[in-house]
Image (cartoon, rainbow, N blue to C red; front, side, top):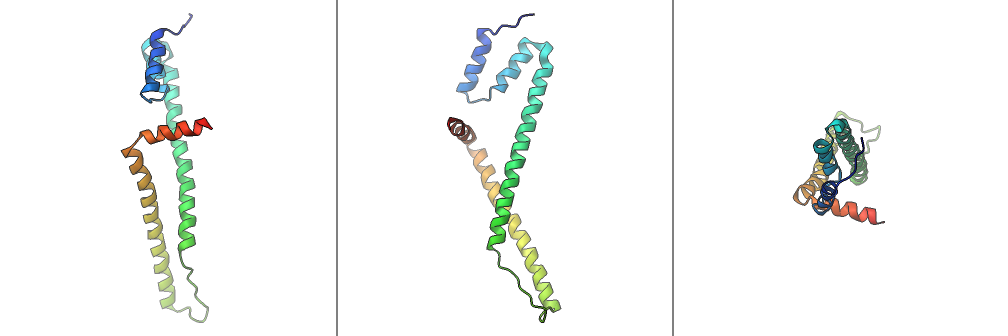
Amino acid sequence: MCYSPNALNIRYFISAEREEVPSTVPLINIIHQSYPEFNWIATTVSIFIITSITVSYIVVGTGMKHVLDGFANGLRATVTTSSNTDTTFERLKSRLYQLDVKWKKIGLYVLAFGLIITIALINPKVRTIINDKSLEK
């Protein structure tokens, strides 16, 4: 069986480009509508997209977490306790300080990741602009 692209299918891709929709969206629609015997390909493409986006966000998020950890560790003051003054009060003070640092890090994570999520939700076309700029290089 010979499958030739027709003008309607090409228009799907052109309109997707104008509407800034990923090209996989019309591809999956064309497969479902015109070639139902190849639905497994559309399913495979969808699974690949979900997996690649998930891995991408995990990798970028992990890198950002490490940057924030380094930033937080660089700003915090070191707690020095000498062996002569290692009293119960000093140990309690040190533990409270460590707990305080933990909550400051969590607040820093929420602030940084929350800012990124807010920007992405307010203006989702920024992602497309950033992708276009990175492809131009």
